Length: 461
Image 1 (cartoon, rainbow, N blue to C red):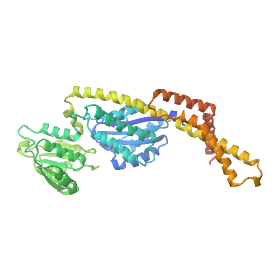
Image 2: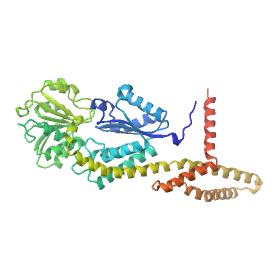
Image 3: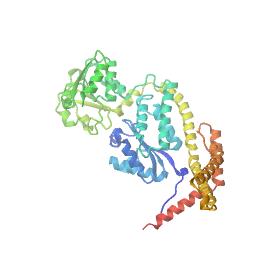
Image 4: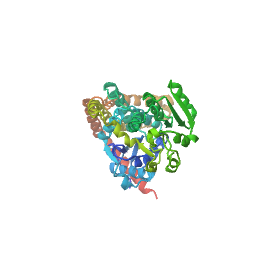
């Protein structure tokens, strides 16, 4: 049996998990590479009760934003989809998932974009990732008006918070926190100046690691990457530092010669396993013969069992909380300033979304008027003799009818259009919408249409 849904049934929902509540072991199984976001949107919108969708997958979070035609059924379908794509049983997954609806979902994304929900408050990388969601969704069926509007507004919020508050002042990124953590964990007799540094991966994160190492005073390091071009570009950008490029095939040899290893590649499988590290020589005497791995990749580049070895110590993104625990009071004050802006922007977005309710009424009213026009024109032409009707006359009558309809509809249409920025105007617009629906029987018309569709479906064998 076919069920009819209206926009009033549709719900904006975010279903996700983050670094605050979920261990990296689970997050990495759910991680979706950026190149796969359009495919994921298509699969999600192929579910029975999902109308629009977007995916935000980073090293710290995996969040799915949807417009659900039925809240309960939509959430169930998305949870099952996440379970099937990750291999994590739905019962286990549900222990870590958070769910937010409508205004709360809007508020959450705005906080994410502003950097308030980041492990490192105020960091700028998350805003770039929110922008990538919009870029990846361009032209993808399912990245619809509600979801695209939400993410575009989130970008505006992120920019405004960073411009009007000093939340980014002194803020560290995941990469800088990783470098800070490594420095904190060096033995007393070692220093970041003489420790042998290795960076695996020269993408955005790896490049930032290199820059922060240089800022700490490191003058030489080895960088392993799939291609040489990126490393050469970084070398040209940073002066007075020796950066030695090594291909991926030399990775394990380079690990064996390093004291501290940073990994930040997009590999979906671990690059460094326990059996690899077990066969490597110990780190230097200054390091206490213990090698440090700082893995900021999700999925992780360093196998989880590597930390079982006594000759190494492995840290991942979940360990960065130790670095960002400082200056808590200052961060809370900045967050309060940002929340004022987020509150204003959330109200504006919700008003804009409410204003979309008038769009179906505008379409239905115009269609209703067009049917009347066609019927009356045909009735008039039918009363005339065939010899009196030529193409010129027919067009003139048709144009006359269309002109009258357009002039008659102009006033009502103007009272149905609203940008959502003024709550008083929006309230009046919605009142006008309901009045027109009642006067012209537009709501009844929809019910009749649904009955006809249902009858056709039931007639099919």
